[in-house]
Length: 109
Length: 112
Image (cartoon, rainbow over all chains, first blue to last red; front, side, top):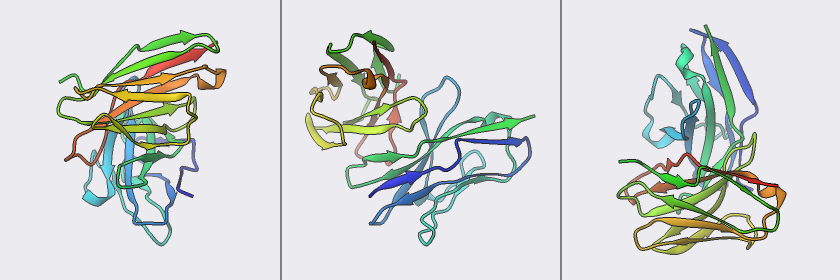
């Protein structure tokens, strides 16, 4: 079954600390994975996509097919990073997204 | 560009009633997908429309139906509303060249 698991509902860190938001997936084919972010009172927006291998707002995510993981990392958290983060899997050619339950990141001063 | 716009923003309906939610995609986008987001959960795929046809469907009953118009806007209809249909309904659009979706702010549906 195709599934995305985000094991942590809440991740609380202090400003300047490293951050790792975990995401594991279950998919039989070649996965295409995304991270979406939702800041307070804003709409869901794309943060990054694994294929592009880019760094957005200091965040990176590496696809590990052996561990079926796509963890989101940032070396030094900022208060403005506080938001809800969703990992999503494109489950087929028509871009049907399967989302995880999300992790709330809270960065404290 | 206003991006993806959804209407109404909030809606309260009685169990058993029918509801229609509307979505205007971002300019230049031709594919529209609908998602249901229950409280504390990630969005769940309902269905996707392209060229006025339902192209893919998630695990939702036939009470959920939709439509896409020639101008790419879309409607989501839910019949015989249940209390469990209370959720945030998100519309997302993308263009043929895009790899990610642009989401609307959603319609908050409450069934009482």
